Image (cartoon, rainbow, N blue to C red; front, top):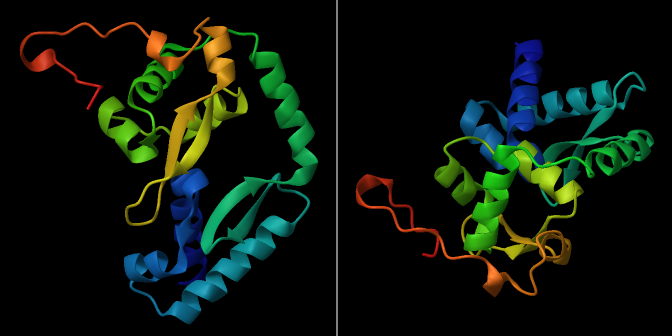
Length: 180
């Protein structure tokens, strides 16, 4: 059972991405004794301490999450400097537009609009310095609020966010009001 518990924790923490997950949520979700969860988390942390892995399990601010190891950072930075010159994918543009028009906005709100997970896209946009954390929502879990950066304004040649073009108003069920 311990190996299975470690496997389940690994999957849950991975899926939660940058947000991470707290131990209370894990205990409630898995319906397992708190000590078993802590023991499995420690086993997982020790597994990823091995130099064979490029990520590690950390516990910051009460949240468990995977992060890349410090030794990998220069390569990740180089990767995003190289890809920074590339154009944005349609999914990246869609996510960026949602953030620009609805900021400040949480990851969950973005995902509700897009209908798909946005963790990876938010990381990419953040690493490209197009979006940034602008605060925390005053709601359970205090999720991160995202907004666009001054680099976003520079790239799109805008003096301020107020210069964004108005969104077209569609009739019927196609209407999506991003201004709410």
